[in-house]
Amino acid sequence: MNNLDISIYVPVFNGEKTIKSCLDSIFNQTLKPKKILVINDNSNDETNNILQSYEDKIEIINNFKNLGISQTRHLAVNHLKTKYIACIDADVEIEKDWLHNIYTTLKKNNATWVCGKMYEKYTENPCNFWRSLRLRQNWGENDVLNPQLIFGCNNLLKTDSIDLKEIYNNYGEYFKTNGDDNQLTFYLKKRNHTLFYDSSALCYHLLNDDYFSLASRYWRYIHFGDGLKKKNLIRTIKNIIRQFKKTIKWSFKDLLNFKFKLLAINFIVFYYFLIIDFKMYEKHKKK
Image 1 (cartoon, rainbow, N blue to C red):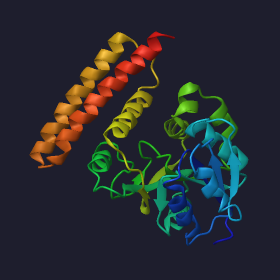
Image 2: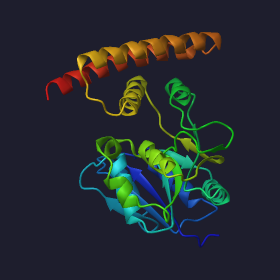
Image 3: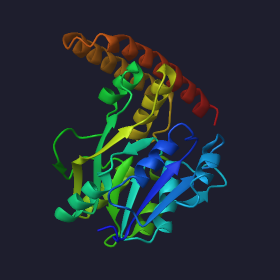
């Protein structure tokens, strides 16, 4: 089975804290990929030095400017020529049977795209615990045929029945900026491809947030989920009102479930969310 036509790529930007754990988990797979590609998206930390220590085991592409996650994935899937292409984010660590399990599931279900189950690793950090509930990147403990979304952070794509250039070249700014997993899910479902969520393909998110980084991450989640709609005052106010209502709803639920440590985080995230949203409105107003 280790002679299978499978490659893995890792997009990374300023991943000095996690890229080593990510790569080591790939090297430790029971099913070995034919190639490991890392695309360094113009990192300005120690990422490049860490990658150089692995240069005999991986192929490295260095972007001359920061392209963002979606365009970096575009570059990777069009560079790699294998029948199966797996993607692992640089802040994700996969269990040793991840590739074996996700490949077996893809073959068994005749699927085109399969994602695994990701847990937050450091939930003793209350911000990470909050993220594991509000921004979780898994569909639960059971397998799901044709899930709502294939998560971009860990997945395996069968390439011989799709036109990758068509997919990545014909979508607009939302796709190119941050919406690749949403749009590729939509594209494949529309064309009746089988997608699958494999609950046995386990991996762990290594990210550690503080309050501001968590709020910024949540703001981006809302912004991209809203389709990159242009900011104006009315839309900004409506967005903040919706978020305040959501914060209240979360807090009542947390009280009922005795998750008291989440209460403060709910309102701190909302406070920073409000600041970020108004700053982005001011930025767009000046354009």
